[in-house]
Figure 1 (tube, rainbow, N blue to C red):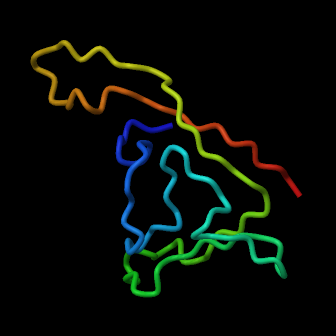
Figure 2: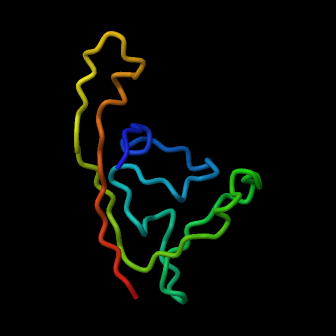
Length: 106
């Protein structure tokens, strides 16, 4: 669940971005044409761009291996009423969305 619009909306994401393989935008399919399943290993491996700084990766260096097929679909969960004129929150952040993916256990 998030209210960060750039994470959920379908966009023309920059394939040269260092975290491109980890994106979770609406309509994302895993595997896809940019991240195909390795036929020998039987999974998709999502990893950082080789030029990613060590500070960015710190504590999350490992790649993510995905065996199943997933289709990310964000749905509206809640819309906050931000009519308070003293609110410091942006109206664009008042929509919360969720993506529910079934992750099998092995």
